[in-house]
Length: 163
Image 1 (cartoon, rainbow, N blue to C red):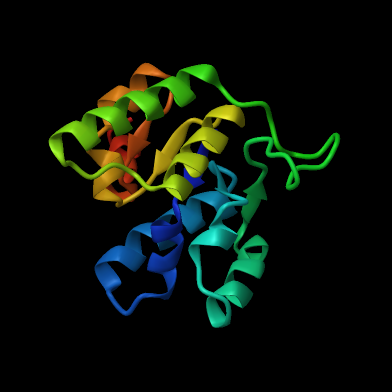
Image 2 (image 1 turned 30 degrees about the vertical axis):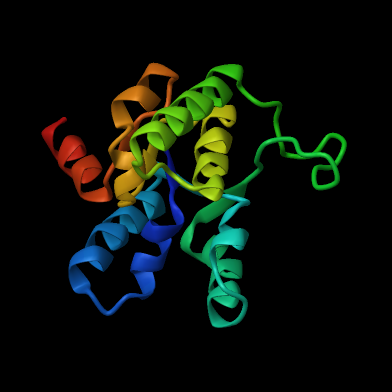
């Protein structure tokens, strides 16, 4: 069973009017319901959404078989013996390296919360990080080098169909 981490933009696709994006997520939910995949979001999803209606929807993700994982141990935020895990130095080094290169050439890199999602995914040893975020997808090869496989929901479903 593949253990999938859903980026916030993928979860938001459930609530979009655009059927193209929503269809892939609904297919993932169907796979989760039959026990073929394990779907999760990191605790950082709460930082990605504005307070209000979306916050309530995120609280109901468990009803859709999407559970919330821990994150990276942070002073003042993590609890002793909680779900958060110790950071992975390879991910920290990659983030620093890519930010330095992007700064030098004026390119865009994933934001702070994006890196926390990716880092938590790695700490939890999950299989695939599903996203539509272009800044993350552009560095998929570099992320694969540190054990983070990044793919779009549609590409993941196509990969499954090819199996």
